[in-house]
Image (cartoon, rainbow, N blue to C red):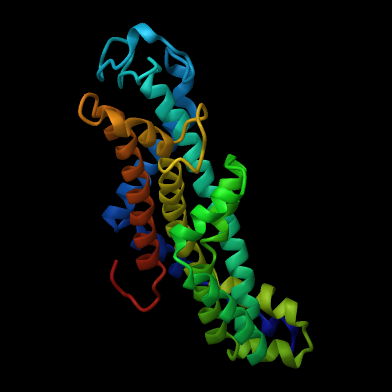
Length: 293
């Protein structure tokens, strides 16, 4: 038996094209992809085209409503341009969401692969660890860590990742257990390939579909959690803007200046909904049991 025979057969080109067609045929997924692409581009490049800086204070121009001259989305209680702050806050919130997803996916995948391929004892220990983390209410655990640690963007990213890897670990563990007795894994064992090689070079590539879907949904969850703890005052701290602390500063002006809350709230809704749509589209596209397009 040759070494090549231990490798899983690569996905045929027709299957890859079918996955693309399924995704392109998912209208909500395409809508989500367009919305999040436009939002990301606006946050990345939009501030350079605005006439005002996000930290520029103008006390004579406080509480201007949207479409007031050059203040396209109005101004806040300090006279700062809301459009500039919204886009700068989007940079922070989207970066926190992306890197929290990356850390949570890496940690969850590592634990899931080891637990799924390891023996009964290893699986029991790691999955009871996952159950232990899941037994704590996520919000209370998140707030406890945010209070105990300095609330910088990097620390908030790490905190969100530490409270979000368990779902990924469960998904990966289940996939690995379903693949560990497949023919290509048994052939690898017969050839004497190391456990690490089999886990990370043979099994893990075949789990990428569920991991990608879980990662996409984790981004939405991370953005929502960052907004939640920042809204409560334990997340990103002013003057550095985030969508969450913009909502925090707007809550006392809901009656007199509702746009202060509506605008960042819409941004959060668009981002979270878009990633959820993309995740749903990827899940349907990567489902090999489905023959619909």
